[in-house]
Image 1 (cartoon, each protein chain N blue to C red):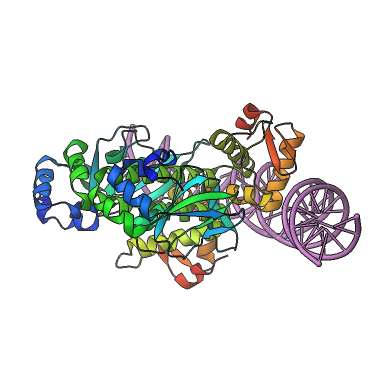
Image 2 (cartoon, rainbow over the protein chains, first blue to last red):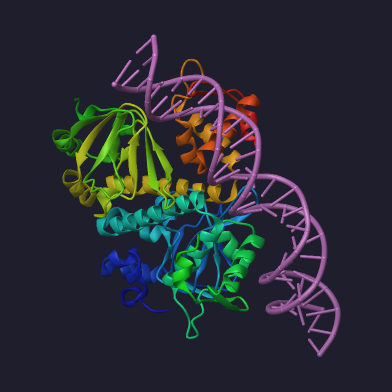
Length: 225
Length: 225
DNA sequence: TTAAAAATATGATAAAAATCATATTAATTA
DNA sequence: TAATTAATATGATTTTTATCATATTTTTAA
């Protein structure tokens, strides 16, 4: 396991705002954690007591609805910081984090980083800034969920994953999700998600190979009503 | 206009974390603003350059959807701080604020308070904490919008307004909203909102007098499917 | 490799919600 | 106050989405 001071991953998150000294302390107490695909990293109600810095892989943050279905609230990739809120509140987690791929992360105990939150305003401000972005995105989701039809939301989800997380050499989305995951992102029944993806396939907007999805006509997807 | 140091309103928001000195500076530069019912306080895209401390009244924060409809994202009442995000980013507002009642507020220029965000970690941390709560609530809304039927969302909206903002002497909700506002909170068509409220009335869950709404059977509302 | 289980697919139907039309009532203002 | 406008109400209809049923395919594990 490398040193935080020289780790490139932190440049994508608030840890970059820590001083060299602070980073060295963090580095000394962090532990490496690996999670297999499908593994639950933490669950709603769990006390987290630290943050995970994502070195590789993707996970979903979900919230259980009263109807028993999970709703995906956010996807986290390399560079992301997981469990930010545990630094600020003593409440248990309101979200569940589940690995969607093999994941490599560093866990930093809350105790070790809490003092920095008090003493290093640059760090606090950066966390605050990231939280602000999260909130903005979250509010955008509310509007989408409330006002846009399922088909449109699915089209946007595909484009979001395409633009945000990229494609492999063959042009397939790097993040491979089950239809159930798509349903849970879009906020619909699994059958409906499957149906809409089938329709997109028939219309030539996407193509598939097993679970993998390739966007064939991004522009048409953009204009889906 | 009174002094911030002795103002009770700030106890409900992050301004309470400022020192006496800081509060005196804030007090010296703040301006009082009044907004009539229906008045737009700021709009999506506006540069705000400060925060509003709500001394009295209620306003809604909305976001315009691509279908042309507004979605209510949050209601703000006495004690609330409006425009928090303008302190943290230089982006223009992603929300529109509109007065739902006569409003009395104090406006504090960003320039005056920005230094405190750098120097007073208690203040920054409190803002961060509030932002965390906002995010949690926002994510809760995503799940509701995505997973719950309109009727259930309306029932919850009524209970939320009842529990959060109280009733007058006659038992009517203190916040009086148009049916269109209810539609915009719940995320549905105005006719659908009207229809559901009519149904609740028929079933004795609520009663109305003009625009005013009284909750007659909170327990039954809680169990609406 | 094969059997069992899980995921995907698709049809049929029901339920939920939007849209369009048109009253009716309430609020404004000329 | 009357006339106009806006808000609320409700019916009829269409569209969207969920649910239930049942194949088919894919994956997993015995």
